[in-house]
Length: 231
Image 1: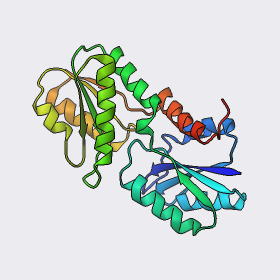
Image 2 (image 1 turned 120 degrees about the horizontal axis):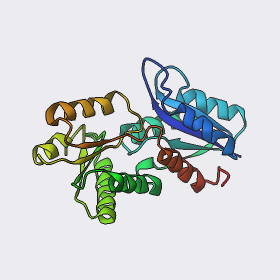
Image 3 (image 1 turned 45 degrees about the vertical axis):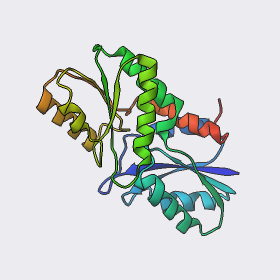
Image 4 (image 1 turned 90 degrees about the vertical axis):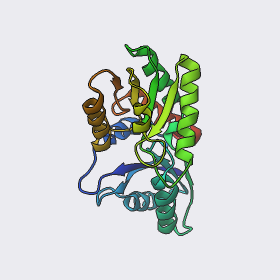
């Protein structure tokens, strides 16, 4: 029997509830037992989730990172903590992050096509100075959106290289701006506020993935890869 751990970012000082309700909504459709493990904070930790599934005598643990791109959390924190906690007691797999799902791709294309603006597009993700892979995946996503919409699409980050500020300095015209974040949290709001302060309301600032059906669809897409959800 397999067990699923939905791995969420979490918060250091309090329990993050933005996407917990979505996991609980998906729960009744699962054919495998599941737990939620947070990477930050002292509640519902990744370690708690693993121990709970071990107590249920699962034979394999599937970790599903509810994260968009494979940066430090997905490439270091999760695998290191999982290996340390399991110590060879069970086999386990870590699924890919959500940014490469067809669901996220389709959502972005739809958002751009529905925009009231006809201009070019800026995709802003979290970014990292430590890994190249997140930007490469963002680039590929931008290319797919560009091909589907016929618009120029610029991939950019908040952290590390290829910052969104560099793109905005080169474009005074209105842009369709998609902040690629799972929640309308601190950083997503900070980016929005900075853009509004610097550029006014000329751009179409699209919502994050929080509470969007596409986020549920992306998670389900990953679950279907391991046959742990009813159609």
